[in-house]
Amino acid sequence: MKVLKILPVLMLTSLLLLNFAFAQNFNIYMVDVKTGEITQVTDLPDNNEFNASFSNNGKMIVCDVLGENMHDLFVTNVNTGVSTPLEGGDGGNDASWSPNGNLIAFDRGPANDPAIYTVPASGGDRTLVVGYGLDPEWAPNSQRIVFTDYGGALRTIGIDGTGETLIWYYGCQSPSWSPNGQYIAFTFMGHIFKVPVDLDGNVTGDFEPVFISPPDIYSGGPTWSNNSQEIVFFSNLTGDFDLWKINADGSELELLADYGGTDEYDPTFSKNGKKVVFSSLPITGESFEAQISNEVMTYNSPGMELKQNYPNPFRETTRIDLILQEEQNLQVYIYDAMGRLVKTLANGAYDKGLHHLEWNGSAEDGSHLADGIYTCQMVTHNGIRNIHMILMRE
Image 1 (cartoon, rainbow, N blue to C red):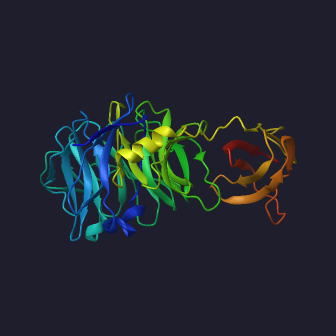
Image 2: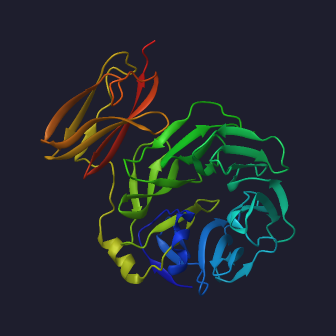
Image 3: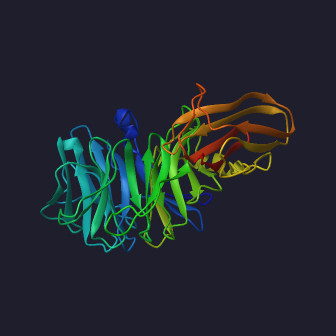
């Protein structure tokens, strides 16, 4: 196996890559979060590897292996790099290893089988969980999975196929259950959201935006850190798809990895939080050096500041103050609780200094918007800032 030193990185990915996977060569890499040591875990000739998931002891991974006539699950020893087909995992996709280490859940979409199964981690007969679904991920007690159906509805179900719950109706992808069991993060219409739940998959509170993507930007594949305090995801904020980290409350967005156009995807933490596996085009020593030589970008730059609106909650009009440390182009957008752009407050060149904006709770066409939580997003070349505002006319 190939071992190289780089900055500590957290990684993630999606099968958005499948349109060009066979023209490329995606492998699985592993990073030590503390030391930054990178290890190439898989390199199967003429195949591509995606969606790796750690075993509970961190010694093995399961991943999708795509070849010209194959889309199956393989298990790889992370120390030796030896990969073997998982018995019962033929046609498998988006595998997820249970926290207790006993089972692997997966869908068989590429095999034209729209169902989710489990199989013993050592291989064997697969067991049907639900007849329609994608992207299964485990609850921390290994008794339930969260998944999306083919209409984009977000659901949970017991591993015995009973007790199904509906979280949301449409537009959802790539769910991930927090290790503390209190939240499910997911992609909704290209944005990152979370929803509070209990271990039976019942919603216990309101949906909360974690990261609202600017217009024409896609963000997806959220995955929780082992302490449930951070979320990693992929996004094309800077052009190609790179890896980002954000606090679960939506603060402190940080660029984690950009290897000069290699496109990094599918990050998954080990159960102890010390390692992260991810899928990428071949990463060379030169690519690592290029990353090391650049200062890690933070999207909470001191060159910009977005103040909390006042009053908040508000009934008629609220004031939004922002500060620029230099003259630059500025965009300020308002999104509703579903991540839909409803108003553009600013879009143009602004001078250095303090600026005041006001919003009266109206949409772009001047109509009154419904009461609820809205996100105000500030975008400059220095980065992105978000605040949440509450419109409460009644």
